[in-house]
Image 1 (tube, rainbow, N blue to C red):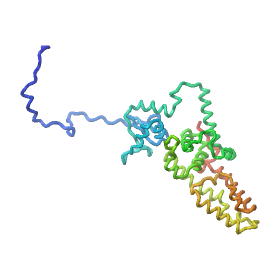
Image 2 (tube, helix red, strand yellow):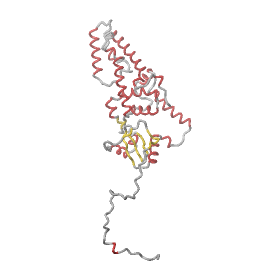
Image 3 (tube, one colour):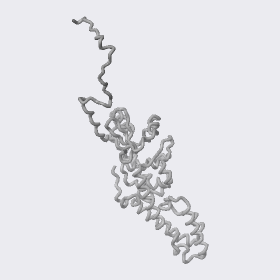
Image 4 (cartoon, rainbow, N blue to C red):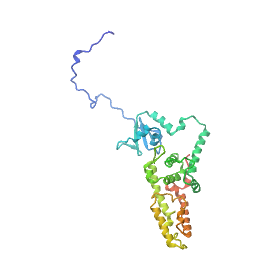
Length: 329
């Protein structure tokens, strides 16, 4: 009857079952096996020079942690938490699992990495002008001729100079495959920062860190070795060549020889990773230490080395000659 009230059986209330209760360690034989975890897949947001992998659900995003850390203290604090030892990595990048949906992360990262996708539409000529402007600034700062490089005087003028800018520009140029700018942007980064600073990273004005990707750093170390050998055999070869200084026409051979050894000593005990003797002009302080004849022959040797340095610059980074560097954009 619909209104009948069913009372519990009183004989079953005070007496618990004598059957041993099932525990979590003893699953029912009839219980279906757990479904296998889905295989992680790469999202379209996969930065080749990213330094961390975010995994949302089964989707992985390779990003630069500094990009997120600059947006929010929450992200910054998240990356400060040390990862457990022996955790798996992908291409040397640690994996951080996040709990929002993959779609939410895709939308967020799309805004951060492709902000123009999320803004109002723009006419094709405007987009073309923006791209042309960006490339022209990069080509101005990092040209393909020694004369144009000398005109920059080694400082940024069309791009705002900020702490860590050369590291960020290096990543940008490598990611966008603006190949013609690669030799000089890497040289600029090595000129602006000691190797120790490049290892630890450079702090930007907002407190975040500009860091080199491990693959880029490896290339820099190899290039630095090639540059050191080049400088010893070309631009600075006059310091070891007794036919250049002291020259056979020198009227003060002992003095010039002593001054040459002093210059060599100062260079040797200066910045051990100094790349300035590859392309920078003759140091006028050296002229004050040498007689006119020795100065002229040493300067000629040095300038000949600079021209050779510019010619070989792409090879220091593993490329061929300049004309082989064609931008992908």
